[in-house]
Structures are given as C-alpha cells and as structure tokens.
Image 1 (cartoon, rainbow, N blue to C red):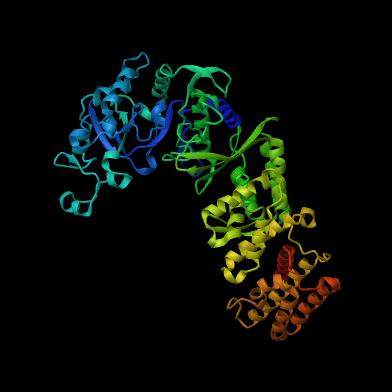
Image 2: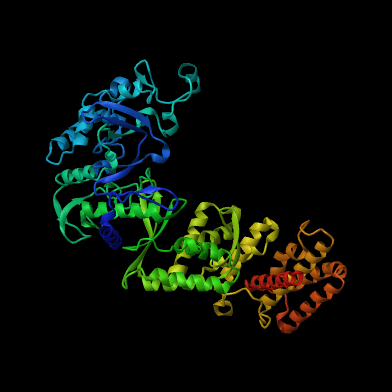
Length: 632
C-alpha cells in the first residue's frame, strides 16, 4: 500500500494543478485528472448551441484527440460490458439513430437509453450544468448520425453507415474521407466529444471547463457505493473494487489492481473474499492512479512498454537514473548547455555538474523523499510493479552524483540540433544496454538491462558481471561494427570498466597513467601504439581510412591471447615503421618504455580484463593530442 499512499500524497500536494493542462518539454499536453475523470481519444467533435441545436461538427486530428472525459467506476474500466461514460462517448451510446443506420448494440442492451438515463439524472440534479443540459437537449432528438452524415463527417450509403473505406468507393464518393484516417476501427467505433458554441461569449471547451468538471464530481460523489475501511488513508470512505486502467497510454487496458478472477484461485487458499486482501476507497484509488498517469505522461521513461519513473512529492521533476550526465545537466540548466558543450575538459564539466546538483537540491525540503517505480504489463490486462522504493533526497542525490562521478569517461557521440558535441561523465543507461547487445539486441533485452542497471545508480550496487563481460567482448570486436558505432561502444565500455575496477579510485579524466603496471593496461597501451603507428604510415601515403589497421583487425584475438597475437601484430608493423623514418623510432621508444613496465611472469597469454580498454583509449588519446600540438 505504500506506493498507493505515496501517489495519493503526491496528488494531494499538487491539488492546484488538477484539471489544468500543461505542456511537456516535447510539446505533449497532459492534465492531472480530476477524480472520476479519464483520458480518451476522440475522433469527432460536435458543437451545439446553448439552446440544444446542432451547430457544426468536425474530424479531430490525432494530435488533438486526447480528451478528459467524466467516467463512472464501471465505465472507467469497461471492456465488453456496455456501461456509458458521463458525457462524451462512442456512437452506440450518444446516437439515438444508431440502429437505424445499421448499428447493432452489444449483448442486446440499448446503450443509448442507458446513457441518456444517466445524463438525464445529472441534468435534473441540483448539480446540473447549463452546458451539459444543452448537450442533453440536443441528443434527446436522436439525430446525431443523421446530422454527421449531412455534415459529411461520417460516410453512409442507402441510410447505412459504411464500416470501412475501400478503394472501389472512390468512384462514387471521391477521395478518402478524413474520418477513416483517424479511426483505428470501423465508423461504428467512433468516439464523439461535445462542446457548446455561444456566439455572444467565449467559454472553455466542455472537457476543459473546470465548472463542468466540478459539477460532475459533486453529482457523482453522491452515487458512490457504501463506505468501508480504506487501507490507504485509514478512513471510512466509499470503497471500490474496480480500479482504473490506461496508466501508460490511452489504449492501455492493463490494470495494477484487479480481483475479478473467481475461478482460478488467484486469492483463494489465503482469503475467501477479495476484500479481505485489501479495501481501497474510490477517492484514494482515483487520486493515486491519476497522479501516476500524470507523472508517467510528464516525465516517465518508457522502453518497450516498461515504465521507469522517478518523482518527488512537491518538486516533481527529479533527474532520472536513466539519463546521461549531459542529459541531466541540459534538463536542469538548458541555458547553460551551450557553455558546457563547448567545454573540452573533464574537470570543468565535473565542477559544473556538482554545482547543478547542489543548486537543484536547494529547491527540496530537508526530509523530502524521492520515489522510484518500474512498471510493466505481464499480459494485456495485468500490470506489475517490478520495482518500487522511496528514498530520502539527500541519499538519492549522493548516490546519483556518485554514479556520475565514477562511471566517468569521455564520450564523443553526443548530438543536439544536428550539432555534435563531446561530453564527460556517465552514459545513459539505455546507451549502455544498447552497447551490450548492439544491433542484435531487441527491446526486451535492452529494457531488462536498463532495469538491472537502475539499482547500480540508486543503491550504489556493482554493475552486474554479465554486463561488464558482454561490453568487454563487444568493444574488443571492432571488425563487426561501423567505426562510429565502435567508437561509441568503446567509450561506454571504458566508463563501465572505470567504475567496475574503481580505476585510479574514480579519478575523473582519461589521462594516460605511465606508472600503471597492470598487465592488461600495459597490453592495451601497446595495442594503441601499434594502431597509431600504422595510421600515421597510411596517412603519409594518403591511404588513411582506406582500411582498418592490423591492431584493430586483431583486437579480438589480442584480448584473448595477447602474447601470441602481439607477435603477429609486431611482425606486420615492420614495413609501416620503415615508412615513417624518424617518427618510427618514436613509436619504438614508447613500446620499449611500456615493455620495461612488465613483470616477466605477467607477460603471458592469459585473457585481458577490461583495463586493457582503458590503457588503449588513454594511450591513443595522448598520441593523438600530441600530434595536434605538433601541428599547431
């Protein structure tokens, strides 16, 4: 129950935002839903006058389709059983002429009569709203489909709706009508939302009008079931057994809480009645689920249906463990990003990152907790919470910063507004997961790996060995990748190896350590020298980039049998070294210097560990930088 209570508290702490649309950074409009309301995609908008006369209708573009609609307990989670929503609904509910145009009611229930009966009760109650009364007056005439056909919004032939568009209809009706471009099913499945047009005053649309929303909440709260002990708030409140779906997106039918399986003993054996498991009030369920939907839409990271969500109760936007160091900085301080992306030193970025973290925490109260949740659906109807915990923000930021300071390397694959940039710090968890599996990795493997990495950031756990080994294997096989992909994989692997081995105790740079005597590190340095030597020789002949060097071609074998493979690489280097004349001796001197660092017993054919990648990268980076300085 802790997750429900935490979400309930989040909703209560943000009451002033209920019913008010906000836009996310990527332009999506979302609303913290009021109680007894849900999101639904609508395909047609019908406007009526305050007197209840038809005014106009139009097809809604897909980007404007999400609509906040009033719902009942039953309709919010309806499947095949016909239970109407409050105002806006499908054609079978709102059209009195549904059957006369070829529609067939599900299970023989006249959905229109049920819908109108509910709407009549609202309009005759003390909480009635004039806009809703205008809509009721119009729908009572039972001419909706007729009006939509006449308006050329719906397509009918011989007084029968044409379910699906077919190519042969073009000869009779011309171009494909707009309605068929926004429908997922046939025309009978069209969802209609209503608005009231008043020529004398400008008012909010019905689904955005807070007075209409309040009217429905007040009316519906009087029709709730009997009260019981709410396990979430500990109060006597109206209880519900039907909890909302559509947590991740509009068409998501998976529920987190359900107990309608009476045949397969999902709760029997322990309990004789599902209410013995837990009783949850309608209000707590609505507020908690609405807060969750809002947070998922606003800041959730969704990967193949799996939701990774981090939030605070009052300061909602919390940097996510999934993000790279640059993502975190750019999200918190977008105006400073240009300064940072122009930076080329690890030290400057690290200092700015620390300042960002400290500045962000100032906005949080001392004891403010941070919540972390991972959700996924096991089946189309059932959703599970794979991970949930709350943590004090001080501990969260301490571990968060620790991750970004230790899983640290230089990355050159960053890109924004078609401008490439270099950044220092930790890669995004998704980038690590994709580097582990490459193009062969499907979304399931990637999301499972991201889930494995989450506790490494939040709890400071070690990176799982299977991830470390897979990265070492892939980064050691550049032949199987394009150069850009290998460079990205290499820098990500270096960041992971740097953290895994706590190399140089988390020192934040990629500088070459000439005093390091680890055999893997030294072998990596040798490989980088051979690679650079051959590159320079090819460049001298104008053939740089024409093919991969021997060091790169033999890298995979070198990682498994360094002594044997080095003999082959060294043999192949002889002609290139002679082409470089005096510069060839420079590389030979470096190789001698590295060779002198080896203990004789360590110079053998045992497999190399991930430190050889660090040695390779740092040695290559230094050789390339030295060249730049010489050219300047």
